Length: 626
Image 1 (spheres, one colour):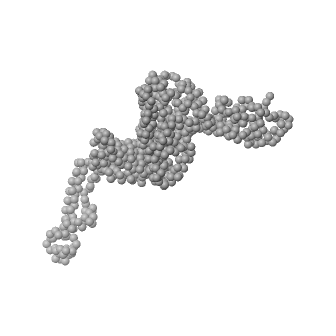
Image 2 (cartoon, rainbow, N blue to C red):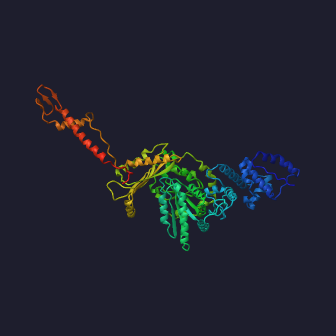
Image 3 (cartoon, helix red, strand yellow):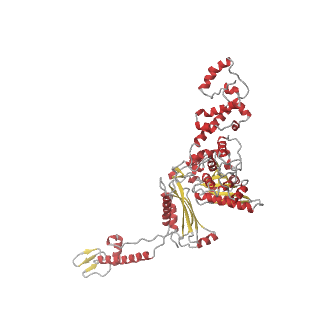
């Protein structure tokens, strides 16, 4: 009978055994050295005992179903790890203990991360789908077992292992109802040829919309783009559904054509890959759309960042959503959309040095690569190649990072959100007023709580006195970009003239973390009131003029007008003052009070006429119907 003794390295127990017990056992012939490997059960027990050194009970539950074949050690590594000589008399090699320690950390990290309950996640399938994980098989499993095994495999996999198939080909795990024939047709075609998405996200002022337009314009040869442009985060699911159906239609009509069909998704507001996967999950929870989950796959995610617009609140806080988007596993590249190197500034408008901004972005995710896209222009071959990568988002390390970080990202509370408000109107504004109010936005930013601060304005407006022109507006508060240019699109201008409300502006304002109807209405009113200040202003009703309202200048004006007026009997004017026969002297006309009263009556008549004109011809509100 053989007894295998396992000792943890660098412990007091091992030291005592080697110094006191081992020599005695060796002298009595009880301790023998052999070149043979222990049996499989002993090796498995040694591995589990090492991992459980911290008495982590949740790790034990993870390992109960772990078979030795899953460890995937080659024969040379097994010999180095578990030779009898090393296990019983010496410390195993550094490589061996490093691998054991990494496995231990993977178990502990997974147990800690997955111990958090997440709202809306009720099964392993839900969790995998929200993290972009899929099975190698194209068949939909009938239970959660396959998904549990896949999640365990991703979490415990060595980063050097080859990745499995990257298709999203699984739907809900129950088989209570069967999909419709149309959905079957879509999925049968797309399981082997899904729609690959390039997801472009970014914060306020990142010019991510320009990146999307630039990519679509540059990559045209043998490529058909399906542009997915949801207006709000809640529209992402419906936009994906529409895109998949368009993709199916294109596949049917271009069956013989060699045209590559790609999708590009512009994330609204501060949405990122996590929000896109949530939208996919919402599709899976709907009986009529759950089979469409098979048909779309994220290929690459890029986060657009202008380093001048990273900080807000006086440089004390980053823009909401930015750090979450840059978290490991949720994006592939940072796309630097700031100015070219020749025009870069030394610090942000809040005084934060650019070196500090770069250091912050690097510290959030040191593994993240940074690609140049000055002013949102993607014109370099290697940048385009990276954005068109269909496998970047599904690398093993990124999948594991998403699985472990998803609970913590969903429990982060308290950060403000950026809320977009779109206003449509039919009346022009005054150019001078509008430009002055744009310039004053940055100076009027409020400190925390800064709800209602305006960080971006885009849209099309008209100016008074220029009825045949429409102007495009772009104003980014944090990076100082402010542009007003004439819209030269003749077709667009003609369409706008016929529209009931041809002008529109979209403002992005800081809002409370929790969405509510009251807060959204308050923000809409804030933006509308700000814009009303740029419209032609209604003149105020003036009150009647009183004697006490007259200034010294007004009195001098009256004197100048009436100083040569005929004098009463007995009064004379010397050219400097008035004097009568009794020797009384005055510097004002003897009838000056009557002249003042006459002046007041004349002015009040004018004021009454003006007030009547204002009342009878009010200036309509900017947002009223034309």
